[in-house]
Length: 501
Image (tube, rainbow, N blue to C red; front, side):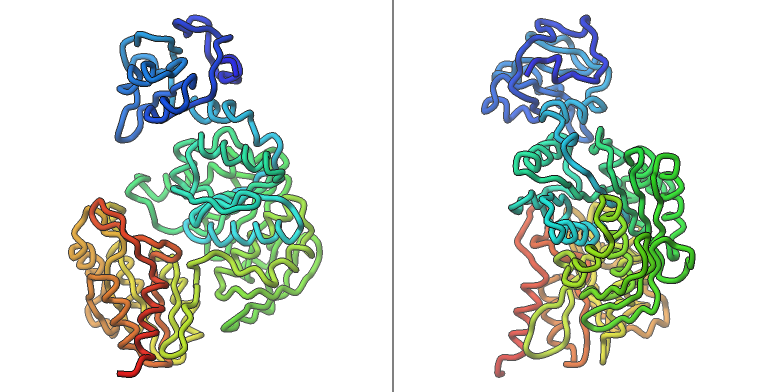
């Protein structure tokens, strides 16, 4: 492409070009200088990241074969090679990425869901609805990226702009029509999803998380609401679960100026909600409800359990309606849709207690997961829980309190300690256990040992909720990432129970 094509819709003047011009050919856009040698002729974009300022790599990128460097005015002295000055390369990055991949979003219908908890399950459910409807789609999120006909790994919940636009391009090339994505607060705050505008947006829940990144809860909510007030396409549809969620009403209010419809999801607290569930029956293996919807009244049966999963299912149904899928077709798809891996996922075992693995890693998610499985537990309810290192430390005692108040037995252990002391993290979590608490407490810092001991200690009628990591198949110890899957460790512990002594 020509530089003029790469710079479309960006404020670049003739005076900004040095040693090149708008007709200069480039083979693409590159943001990692280490890739230039394999991609000669690329335009190298230098941004000032949170830890590394890529302007230091501009001379090397030019010598390795970059056709031109795109640099921020005032960041470095003029390099000895073709370059173009930008006022802010970071803010230009998303539009450059879209242009580099030929603006694939123009050929797609887009949906995005945000919320502290529930994004992944909702995205999976919406994907299942689209699949049932026969539509080619991609799903981007925490557990991986499904791109029309194959699974690809994902490094981030919401990809950075160049990778995101490449995924959209692959969707178009593979004849996909829809993209469903999780929009994290980090990504929304950093502008990663610019310049995308979504036909349907959803909001699942809001509670404390990521205060290591956002300075306040208000700033955290404001970042999430950017999906509604900045990224919703004119005439789009916004959906939010509103029961006990004032933040959801804020989300919908932000969407109203451009939305065709704002759909409230309620399990009865808001009798005027556009998506209202009544006559709800929660079972050990399914949930049933009667739904009032924009298309009329329907009966829903889903294999998902717990009130918050009913919320997630209805948010997905509302978003699908916003994409043009009739409610009746979504109801049929939800009869068999099981949601996301590692979300209230039962571990198979012939003998011993019931073991459920869940991604709950915030205080609210832990409380909700414990409340969901409590009715299914015939004996004592165990929770095995840790907190991540190098992340918001203020939630650790709150997590400990949530576990102690919701369970009969609390196994306090490690999650991903990263560069912090695992022992110190566990101790900080335990400060939240209130004096006089009747919970049976076990402090076992090694997570593998904690899982083995919890399964071995529990009675056959007990239920163990292993919380925090869900689908993750790794643990981060220091700077090392090792293989670790809660489901594998739990399965092995259940097998060991069944072996003769």
